[in-house]
Image (cartoon, rainbow, N blue to C red):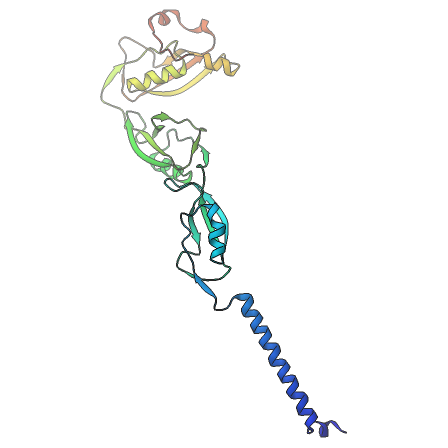
Amino acid sequence: MSFIKFIFTKYFFINIAIYLVLIVIALWCVFYGLGKYTLHNQTITMPNLTGYHTSELDNFTSDNSLEYIIIDSVFEIGASKGSVIDQNPKPGVQVKLGRKVYVTINANAPKKIQFPDLQDVTLRQASAVLETFGIKVDSLKYRPDQCVKCVLEVLMDTTSIKPGTMVPMGNSVVLVLGSGLSNEYIDVPVLINFSLTAAEKKLKEMGLNLGAFNFEDCESAEDTAKAKVFRQFPPHDADEMIQLGQSILLFLTADSTRIPEIIVSTAVPINDGN
């Protein structure tokens, strides 16, 4: 039997019908399987996870046919520690069953950073630097100084913060800025035989500023800690006056024999334990 005669027989049409039925069944299985796999038309409204503690997320998300993944932790004042403070997708969005929810939680404690050196930096620059470190500027204070609107000191809870100090992110600071030299003049203080800490404290009390300082005869950290001022500029003079806000340069030594005896007898250093 030739092929042309075969295609006109009932056997040929029976085979074609069988093949078509098989193809339809196969296509139905494929689309049905895809629908099951992709959860076609099976959606829920994304719940609000904000405020839920991580210990509660497992049960809550499984009850809602969701899966959560923690992608970040930040410290937010006022939020409960370990609780969700942000999520993606957002609440109210229609999502498929089994959808992954990416959450950010509130850390148990704020991260700490090394405080940057802001000495003599302008207010604008200091604000920009602090923002990158997650530190807020709470308020400004002004003190007489030659450098107008330059940072003289940074205070956190009334405590002076030195560069390199580890501080928590999110805290607020007070910037002490220079207001320019005052028209008021005072006597140049006697700082001979003062430690650096005591001299700086005395200058602040008088409305003056610590300029550059140099250590001599100091071969160790212990020598530096016990060093005293043996020379200052401008020097003390009964007839010498200085404007409020000016800076005084100090020279310190660990060699007590270099400290002038006459001035030592008249100066009364602040007792700072050094």
